Length: 338
Image (cartoon, rainbow, N blue to C red; front, side):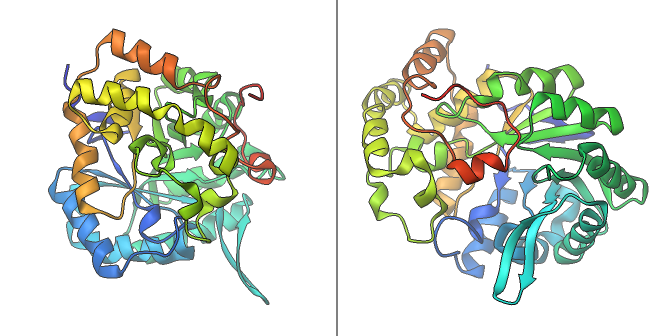
């Protein structure tokens, strides 16, 4: 069936594809202009997107301020998600990213987010990273207090293992878990996807087109901006990326057979995987936004799904998704080194 039906995330019914707002302000080279960011956000809303995802970290508050300014007049039309527990902190030598899951830090992050987003309540509030120095029960307990105070409506976790999800869910119902998931990043298939299904949580897939790899448009990783976070990711190193590019001709063939773009094929694969999966591709382009949303009309047969699974998977992708430092900061089950 065509994937146009809404999906459930906590108490909310949302569009099958949401919008990840991060790269309007953060991570992939220079941020776009405020005017371009506004165009993307409003076009997404007009195109039927009802799930918008941001975080305290993105642009050290700039992304939340953009989302708040642009979407405040339309607040009743969408589900608003943000994240705390990882944010920019001012030091003598500048603002730096800090993971801090202490209850006082979570309260501070949430209060800042409410102010930046110009809203009285955040619909879904995630713990962006589990601070391993703080028991997950303490961090989630602080987030549960935010629900009781009416600051947020539901809770989520990002980049956590199945066991951590279960511990958190015992403290307060977890409405969603957000982790990288695409054809070339399958870690959630080990246990997290099923755990989410078991507890009734949505699984929100970030980087669903593999940080542009599955769009087929990034043919030379050496052209990435010096500040682009992909520069530090092993799969985008010269030798690894050259090996990974060899997967694309077969992938493009399948897209051609279905008369869809490679990006649409990647998103359709996620939509067909399970009804509790919600991809949140990000983009700075209105054209790409509309292309991504077109994935909702792409039909994949079981045979095509099997072909895709066989083509791009942990055994065929070269390189881990994160470097050693970034891997140490997440709490996800990892496949054996490839």
